[in-house]
Length: 208
Ligand code: MLT
Image 1 (cartoon, protein in one colour):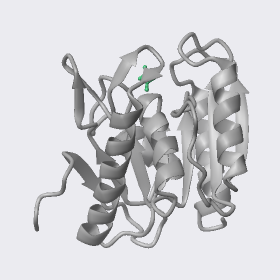
Image 2: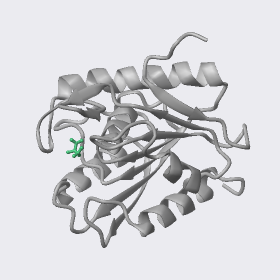
Image 3: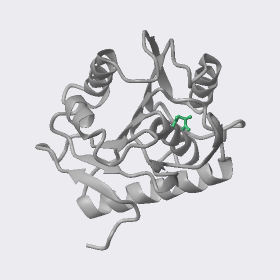
């Protein structure tokens, strides 16, 4: 098999027809980070987990930033397109269906960007501690795609105004957004796990 564009892990899971999860780690993480979370959210589904292709010092990320919360949008566009191409390659290589993104922080931000730039890539998304990726978001045709946004009320990195902008850009592109602000900071909590699993079950599980 030809090498895919991103270093990644693929775990087939016990049910080949279950909706796969695309796991997208935060800054400084790698392709192994979210595997346990993915397995919790979708116990039998294929998991595909790429490593961000950019390095900030020694820390992998999915796109460059100019400062905390200030994104290099030209790089973001390029990397979001590269990631969408990776997903297409991985689907072919592993014979898997359109995935749902499960992204944390920087990984959630590129998932949101990819939805707006390449709406055909994802069947849905669970975005944990995400912010608006673009100052002026592109308009996409998201046709009712389910999105869960889990933010932290005490998150020092993600301002509530940025979450609002993200919600409105996804909704005005036709996504069905569920949003919950948790009693949490930037780190994940047990409630994130519970909400993410319930959302996946509701929309994509055997009963979804
Ligand atoms: C980002 O750069 O994507 C966000 O600021 C979150 C982070 O990675 O710290």
